[in-house]
Image (tube, rainbow, N blue to C red; front, top):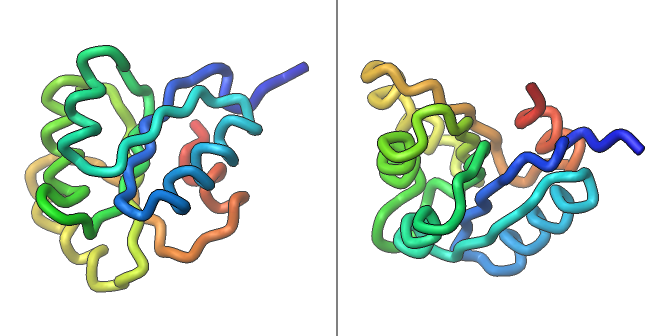
Length: 123
C-alpha cells in the first residue's frame, strides 16, 4: 500500500499536548514517523537521536519560540523542511526576518484541517 509520508520522519513541537499528539496521530495514519516534543528545548534534545525530514512547530511557546527553534534546527539539519503554525495571524510577520536571512519556512494558520496540514508538508 502506498504511503504519502513514505516513512519520512516528522518532529512535531507544540506546548499544547493535545494539539501535538493530534498532529502526530494524523501524520502517523498518513505514513509518517512522528516524534513529539512539548517545548523547543525538548525538541533540540531529541536531535541527538532523531534526524527529522520535517519540523512542524507552534510559533508561540514559552522559552524558545518556534522561529528560534527552526533556525537552530536548520543549523543541525540543513535539509529539514519547516512548517510553523500559529493561531495568531501576526505570527506570520515574524517569518519576515528569517526569510530575509535566507530561511524558507512555511506558515500554516491555526486552526487547520488535516488535509491542509498534509498538503503543506507534501513534496
